[in-house]
Image 1: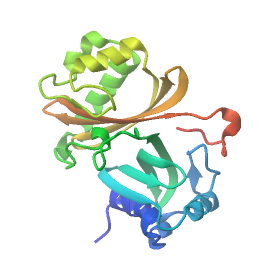
Image 2 (image 1 turned 90 degrees about the vertical axis):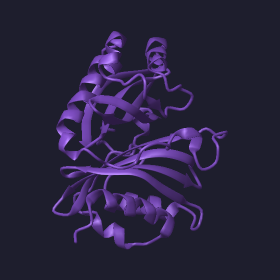
Image 3 (image 1 turned 180 degrees about the horizontal axis):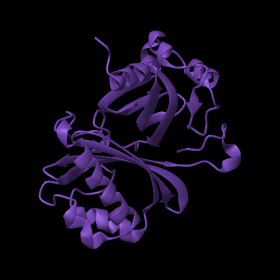
Length: 253
């Protein structure tokens, strides 16, 4: 039985911890495109990064994962010796059973977050259901991001969010939809351009760029949809390094 693509993505990230080499065979070393701006393009730079991690110091835990066509997504918690405690999303594009392209987004977890829960950043539902509603749920979330997060139409929030059952895992934000409005109106996070919408069943991930506290940033937002409304949200926001510090020319998105 063929291993689902998202399970392979998890196995690849777990190999950071286990040092197992077999998952690395899923990369196409001839055509691999890297979108992490701090890593050089191609497979050799990835191997160099893995070799730089001190053995026995890294831990990786996957919470959610799904596949949309030829793209796999995983939502993970990292403990990496040189980088610290991180929340992240890993996104791989596959061709002919090999990874040919990679995107990610990483965010430090607050040092005072309770051990094991990361301050609630990973709590919540994990099971993919309602796969027959994938297209409908992706359309709903795309409309929400374009209308509310980019367009600023906070008056339309009730069209998308279930106010009675909504949970938000953004650090420091309450569960009430009003907290989303407060962040938008205060300018703490400004989505400006939506690049990609990926989903399977009740889970939809959007990849956007904009400004976080005035600095260029990448926004990865994961939404859970139930009965036509967004009921849960996780995110990872990464401030982008200056262009002259990029190690490749592929762009973040």
